[in-house]
Picture 1 (cartoon, one colour):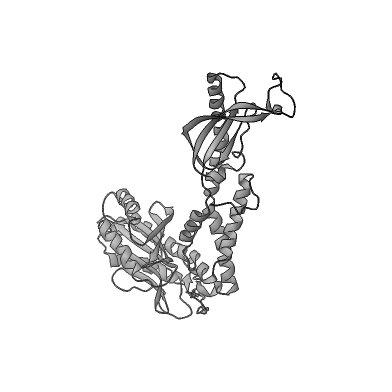
Picture 2: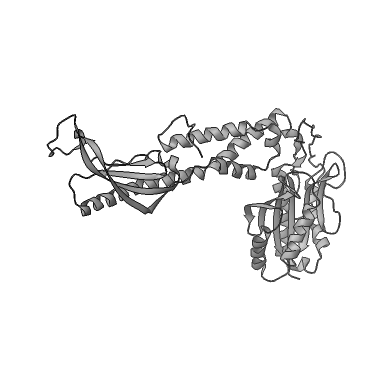
Length: 412
C-alpha cells in the first residue's frame, strides 16, 4: 500500500495501522447501501484485506555489496585523537555497504527500522530500494571494517524481525476489523429500514412440549410471527427467514431423535429413509407452528425431504439419505440446494449410516464437503456427528445457505 498521503509522514508503524483502520471504516461507510445489504461478507472482507494489508518488508541479506568513495567529512565527526580544526572538513575514504530491499521500502521507513544508529558515526539509510550503511574509514584495517559491517547487519535484524512480526499481526486482524465495521453498518441499515423484525420468522418452541421422546400433544402451540417484508427501492429485496435460534432448536430436535435411533437400534433396524424421516417429523411438528393456520408446519414433499414453506418458497429443508458414497453425498447437497431460491435459507442433510465404521464415514464427509461447487466455508462443529457449513445458491455467492450435516449410525 502506498503511504505517500499518510498524514503522519515517517514515524511509528502503529501510526500506519491506525491510519489504515480509519481508511477501512471510510471505505465501508462509502459503499452503496444495497451493496452492503447484498454482498457476501467473507468475500468482501478478503477483498478489503487484499487492498489494505501492509506489505511485510523483505531485505535480501545475501545481496550484500561493498563500494567506496571519498567525501569531505566535517571535523566534528572525527575522533578526538585527530588533530583537526573545528569548522573545517577533510577528505576521507567512505566505505559503503549495500543490501537490496525486495519489498516493503515504505514500511522499512517506519519505526523502529527506519534508521538504526550503530557504533561510531555510521548508520543505515534507505536509498530507493537499497539499505545503505556508510562507514568512514579512520585508519582501520580490512578485518576490523568487516567486523564492523557484520555487527551492523546483526544489529539490524532484531528490529527488522520485530517490525515484520508487528505487520503480520496487524494483517491478521484486518478481516475481523472489516467484519465488525461491516456488521455494524449493515445492522444499522436494517434497523433504519425497519426490516429486522419483518424478515425474521421467530418460530418458537412450545413451552408445554415434551422434552422427552414421548410424542407431545400440546393444546396450544406458539405461533410464528411473520410479516410480509416491505420491498425497498434499489437492489436489496428483504426476504423472510427463520431466525438462527429457531434453526438451532430444529437441529437439536433432529439430533436428539437421531441419537435415539442409535440407542434403540433394534426398533429402527430395517427401516427405510421415509420411515425414519416420518419419525423425525413426528417430533418436529408438535413443537412448532407456522402462523395461526392449522395443519402441519413441517411438510414432506418427495420421498425423503422435510420442509417449511412460506409463500410458496422454502425456508427450511432437511434431506434424509442413507450413506452410499461420496458421489451420492455431494449429489444430495446439490438436490437440496436446487430447492432454494432465497438467501439465508436454513437446511440440514441427515445421513443414516449402515456401515459398521461410522467414524470413517464422518471423516469422509469432512473431506468431501468442501469439494462441492457451492461450498463457501466450514463454520463449526456442534457435536461429534454434527457439522455446520455455509454454501451459496447456484450462480450467486452472495446468497448464503446455512447447512448442517448430521450423521446417525443405524446398522441394517
